[in-house]
Length: 453
Picture 1 (tube, rainbow, N blue to C red):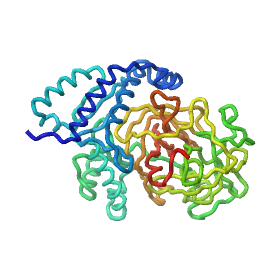
Picture 2: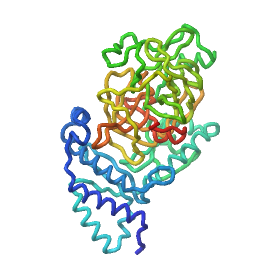
Picture 3: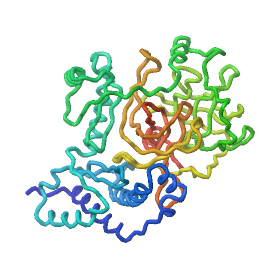
């Protein structure tokens, strides 16, 4: 029989080693997440899920730490690794491409039988048809192909989004008009791949008021009678935000722009970052829709509540990543809240779903909690119906609730055995009861940012 590659052998060995290592680990809720985080998991998902989940998190961290890293600092997944997910009971499920097992030599098969017996109570091993690397390669292909067909294929215009569904081990394409004829037309005009399945779109992600954007796009400037967010019913002092005369900015605080002397609430403070010698924070580029239809551009001034000037946009990119970096004034400082220590690290979720994440934005009071539903998601946006189209790539979809104005706010998770948080990214929008975030690792790598001075 064909011998297994070194990568595959390393993967299977890592699974066995991590479980053996875990057998000697005593997990304590307070040490694992911090009492606040564990209580939040219990409140949102129940005690059974929380108890199993805290063990599964330890396992997945051990597993991912065993994977090699390339020169760019990216995880190199084993060729037969199909991804992982946390099920409704909080248990860890590992997907392994089936041909691995079909070609085991006798000794390897015997070792795997022992392995599966050891982990039967901790990890569910599932066979899969496609590796996570193949799923990501398909996403990359569609990211290039579908937009290139907008001018030549009607079926490409019928696509709302596409993403990786780890549990089903497929790439899902959501169609606005969904029926057998629409699916066949896409396969004929764009591409036909066995790794892809089709579903009906649950709706668009709305970034801003469409009527306002349509008028602004036509005029390319704002008048004093523009529509803007009315925040008079939010008591920011009661919600824990800093008063207007403070020089402290916190994750999830509201940000404003000044148009013709009128301050418009447009989004939220994201995670703290450094770019070259500049210190600042990341937020969404579309928060600049309060100024122009193209979103933020370099040089835009950003304000906190009460009209306090806190920084200047150093760069912004709407197409592809919906990201802006705001350089803070020298007198402005970051502070953390009791529930969100300022994150100085990022978390890699490119191979998993089901993990619990949290978010804080300026509109929805308090901290929100949900689970990752899909990864590698690309969504097609229009500034308004029939207006300019663009995509935002590498989004994470979650079950969290959000509202307009939360855009740009931090999305994060607690890391085991620390009181710190790891940053997942920034919130960009919501639709059909789910939320979407741009991944921090991708942002930082593309735009030369880092989490530490």
